[in-house]
Amino acid sequence: MNKRIGIIGSGTSGLQLTYSLKNDFDVTMLHYEEPGEILRGRIQSTQVHFRPTLDREHRFHMPETDAAPSIKSIHFSMGQQKLFVGRLTGTAASIDQRMAYSQAMNDLEQRGVRFRKARIIPEELKTLAESYDLLIDATGKSGPLAPFPVEVELTPFHTPQRKCIVGYFTGVAPVEPEGISITVLPGTGEMFEIPALTEQGPVTILFIEAVPQGKLDAFIGVRTSQDFVERMKSILQDNFPEIYGRIDPDRFSLVDESAYLQTAITPVIRQPYLMLNDTLVLGCGDSVILADPITGQGCNTASYCAEQLYETLMAHKESAWDEQIGIDYWRRIGPYVKAVTEWTNAMTGPLPEHVAQILMKAATDQQVADQVAHWFEVPTKAHEAFFR
Ligand SMILES: Cc1cc2nc3c(=O)[nH]c(=O)nc-3n(C[C@H](O)[C@H](O)[C@H](O)COP(=O)(O)OP(=O)(O)OC[C@H]3O[C@@H](n4cnc5c(N)ncnc54)[C@H](O)[C@@H]3O)c2cc1C
Image 1 (cartoon, protein in one colour):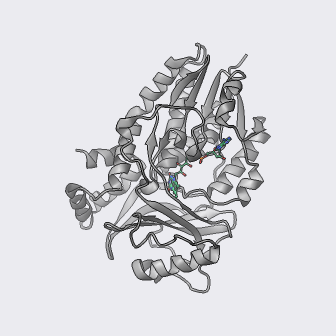
Image 2 (tube, helix red, strand yellow; image 1 turned 180 degrees about the vertical axis):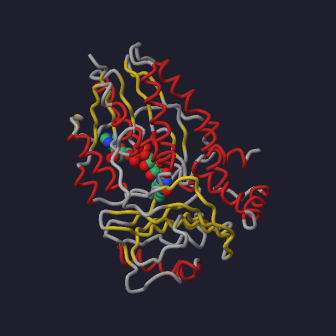
Image 3 (cartoon, helix red, strand yellow; image 1 turned 120 degrees about the horizontal axis):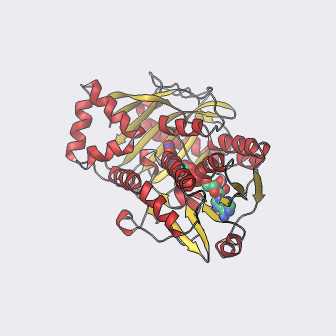
């Protein structure tokens, strides 16, 4: 009989895990929203899946589309000065999670994966664990459900370092060549402009990372979508005139009433395994590796960890599943998690002098510009550059 795995959460990590594990194990996906509810619901995030993540999704036969805008480059500006355009080594894509998650859930159901609709609460875990050989807590930033211990050395902050303000807009002419655009306003925050695909067609995501109480932290009290659009317009006009100049005032609006978000993340890293009575519980994705989105790595880290978790389980397919499996999984992902976490945390502070010099050099040296773009595809390279 195949071992039984319960995966709690149908997001980036839970879905990739289900695709990868469904042929070798008896997988049940526990989720609390139906695909249609997710599709019509509020955005939770932005998302850029860099080439290594898209390759993993391809490996596990996840749904693919070539309709998403091609993200081939990263434009970088400091203040009002455009510094460089770095080329990515592979095309990246940003597909509205509402669309991607609901499509994948429908596809998995058609392929015979068992779904159980339930909003699991922590008190239920012990009873739930009795029905499985392994529970995976993939509950994202609202998790974890299991009391995974905090890794103190990788968790230096106790409050959010940024306010995250996101809208999915129509009516913004794209940058040329098409790609992500990052504008840093030192001491104040950052603006990320991301071309993306939604159910209604292509959009431009405007994503502000505002230093709390700074001048970009200007959305407090904004309650309606119309207020949100107006506030974004005035923030662009005052702080990002280049983007403001690419707006078509008649078409500038949210793609739908639920396409905006305000949140703030306190980063926390947890040891992703524990035993609950005799059942192993593992964490994957934001439930255990939660970072500020400033480096756009959350989905990519979730995908990386989900693949390593798959490899761990396949290597121990026939043996007993106990704490040793968790130790092996943590040993595999630990170096990557440390690198991406330390880089991301460093990005929320003032840029180190030697990094500022790399960015200035990138303005006149295309090879360096491309290397900087590559940091986002392979964050261990960014870590090497920051902590050399
Ligand atoms: C503002 C913002 C911008 C971001 N931008 C980027 C970016 O550009 N690039 C990038 O790579 N990452 C980005 N991220 C991070 C990225 O969205 C997450 O890291 C990624 O979605 C994590 O995947 P996950 O599977 O851990 O969680 P999620 O994708 O959030 O999925 C969690 C799932 O668990 C379910 N769930 C939760 N609680 C329960 C429960 N009790 N019972 C049952 N189900 C439950 C939820 O319904 C959901 O389906 C951003 C995040 C934010 C907040």
